Image (cartoon, rainbow, N blue to C red; front, side, top):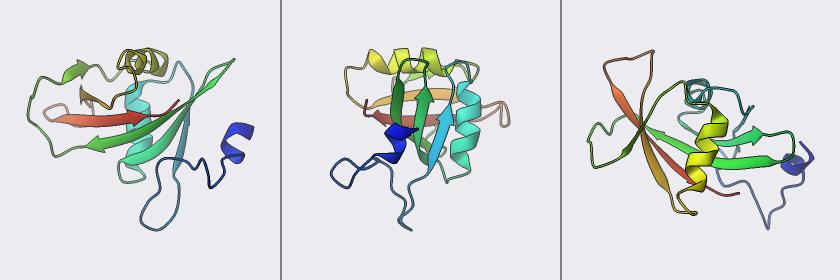
Amino acid sequence: MKTVARRTPIEPLPVRLRDGSTPIVVALPDDSLEYVISMTDRFGGHANVFVAFPEKLKLIDFQMDHNDTSDNGDQHGHSSMTMAMYVAFLGLTEGTPASLKVNVSGNPGAQSVHEIAYAF
């Protein structure tokens, strides 16, 4: 948590809401993607997500778009994917923003595109 507290104006958290707040969601590697989606929804679908591994802390600029139902060749993921698997997926994108289409159990008929741009 010292990493979070030591962020400076030179290196601020990537997500800042219109009211000036910086929403933070902390997840463990075994937490499901669906859990993080539900926590991020509480902030309007955009938050700084920290995944707390025993030896490191990963930061994700996590943004969701529930209105985009198109299928433009997006990757498909499962809502029970662990955050450790998700971080591994993001590592394969080589620092470019990634989109992942996920079915959320609270709304099984709808698909949501979750746009992720991350900074580690």
